[in-house]
Length: 385
Ligand code: UDP
Image (cartoon, rainbow, N blue to C red):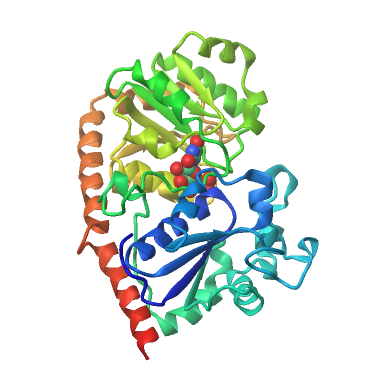
């Protein structure tokens, strides 16, 4: 972070959900570490309704990566009241209150539109580039326009530096958690467990399992007889069978409403990651070399699960029945396979290989690092003209 700023400014404007904030924020940190002023833009609504845990990161490094989170007063002023803002600028409403397709397909949710609003109406420093993301189908036109200016470059995995190349100082987490992570509870509990013995289970920030699926997961975990940490968001807790919650007091399992997932995956006690195969979780499992059991539910999760099992060979996919429910026997079978079955040796070997490849990609001279350097050079040239 010692790099001298060379006058370029990039704004990153993620769709305001955890899985979209994390990689763009990480990208902003890479730019900041190479002397570009990078600003993460999110909305007052997002901060007001969730809070952003880990925000000291921003205040400490305000000169290289600052946050503005007030849309209608403070750093950025748009000439509208909050209720007049497009839905996306207000932030992600709770999943049970939103009709997701109409939310993401509204023309005003388009990053290009939002970027235009930001740069046109805000008093932010002029931005050389604004990076926005939403859901793929909204981005076709934007990608087409940008491609003419700048052919696409591949970057990633965008995982905090401490877990891979260690080149960005103190970069131990994404630094913008929408829920409070229960890190010390998890660490204390894991201290008592032996190496690679615990299953870490998480369905990310959006997937909401049916009660029937929760029940099958719960009894599948119990039936495996393995220790587990399961992230069950507060809004989902009531779906757990009460006898199962009682069981967690026996020390076999820990249920937390949110945690620092990277800390979990990097912990030596974790032996397997049961994941919904969101793209960030998939890359985190891959980048940290943790064997996975995929329980995908929708969107890219199904493709990612296929990659985990068939292309990278770093895990297996749990299959649903005719109702799409992964039954307890299926989960137990898959856990057994990854934790000690014949296939587990090969899976662990592949997981180590991919961990090394991820590190290589973002280390100095790696494919991701080169792409970011090319972009930074392009910014510098633009500012020298
Ligand atoms: N995550 C976390 N703590 C948790 C669960 C998830 O920090 O308890 C993070 C995880 O590290 C990942 C993001 O939330 O970066 C979830 O993104 P993903 O693309 O996997 O899934 P989504 O939430 O978008 O479905």
